[in-house]
Length: 133
Image 1 (cartoon, rainbow, N blue to C red):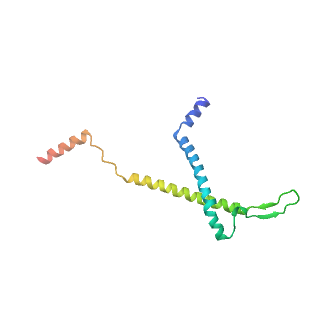
Image 2: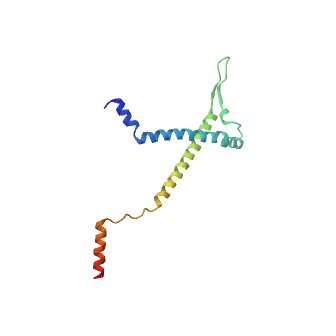
C-alpha cells in the first residue's frame, strides 16, 4: 500500500473528520469564552479585588538599566490565564452536559415493539386454537 493511499484511507475515516470539525468549533468556542472572560467577567473581578487590569500586575525582579529592559514576573497574566482556563473548562462541561441531557431524552423515548415474525404468528394461532378447545 503506497503512502498516498494510506493517507487517503486515514483521512477518510469518520473519526478524523469529526475530530477536525471539533477542533475548529472548539477554537471558535474558545475565542468566544475568552472574550467573555476578558471583556465581561474580569472587569467585575477587578473591581472586587481592587486591581484595574490583571494583565498589568507584575513584580519587578531587576530594574531597567539603560537600553536593557526590566525583568518582571508577570503574575497578573498567570492569574488571567487561570481564570480563562477555569471558565472555558466550566463552559465546555456545561455544553457537554447539555448534549448528554438531549441524548438521554432521546433514549428515553421507547421504540415501538417489533412486528412479530411468521413463526410467532403461527405460534399465537396455535395457542388461540388450543385455548378455544
